[in-house]
Length: 126
Image (cartoon, rainbow, N blue to C red; front, side, top):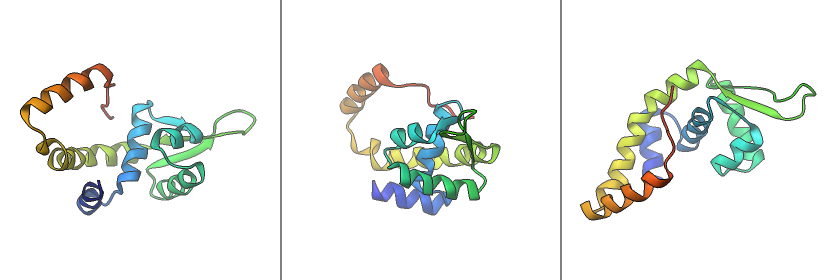
């Protein structure tokens, strides 16, 4: 996993955890409450707050109030975030292929594909 993280950051300038945040937002049609985003990305809420602040500074996401009374924070992808995610997907896919898929035999891949077909959701971006 560390190799994938290092390679992705070297090739794209985007940390794997940042990629995950952008991907989680894209999967959720572009926006999530901060708490839900932290849960999906398996990051503490405080850790997510710091990560989102950096992504806001980079213009990849925006933050806003989730409700009329101002309780809760909504995080949304920007057009720049969608573009950055779209640019990064090929490097991420190559890393997954190199560090995980290439280590499996054809028979193992067939079993894995069958299992994932049962649980996979549409993961297109943009």
